[in-house]
Length: 105
Image (cartoon, rainbow, N blue to C red; front, side):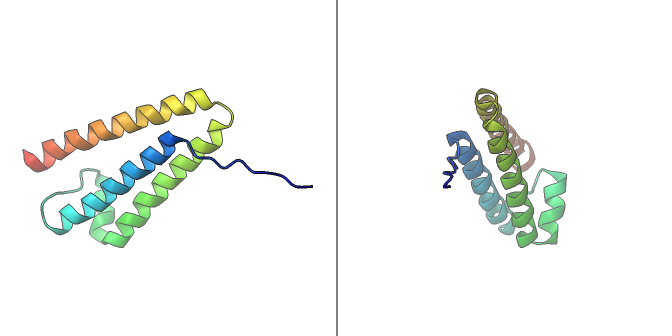
C-alpha cells in the first residue's frame, strides 16, 4: 500500500524562514564589521560564543517554530496562517524598531 505525503509548506512559513535567514546573515555581517550589536540578549550571548553558534541557534529555533506551525496547520490552517502573518509583521516591526533604537541612536 502506497501513501502519498503532502509536505507543501505555506507561503507564510517560507516568508518567515527567509526573513529570519536574511536577519541572521545581516546580523553576522554588521556585527563582524562593528556596525551593529545584537539586540536580543540570548542571541547576543550566542554571537559572543562565535558566529557558528549564533547561526546554529538562530536556524534551530526558526526551523523548530516553523515545523511546529506547519504541523498544527493541518488541524487549523486559518489560525496558523494568521499566526504566521502576525509573526512576520511583528518580527519586521521589532527588527526595524530595534535597528534604529540601538544602532542608529
